Image 1 (cartoon, rainbow, N blue to C red):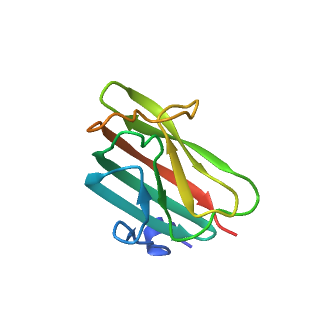
Image 2 (image 1 turned 60 degrees about the vertical axis):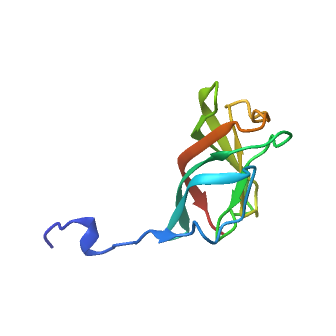
Length: 130
């Protein structure tokens, strides 16, 4: 059998989840893009979130349509930007959870919490499904 491109056998599509996800950590968002694709028992999620925070808001999270497997927590590197920091952050999806917690540095920690601070997080996640 002759070799053909993978797309001949398999052509997954991105599904826009931006309007369905529950977000926390922003007062308002200027960019809100969340998409996912299922390939077998893997879900690929790409996201780009930019918005304004308020005093006292030190966390950020969003939901995805399907839960991470119960095998283990998933820690994955992402890109984060605040008024004073451009860094490699981390996304945590706990075992059996459909919430992605976003941290501003590889050491986790809290986001800046001053009023009017713009925070951005973007990345691509690969999640094992049960």
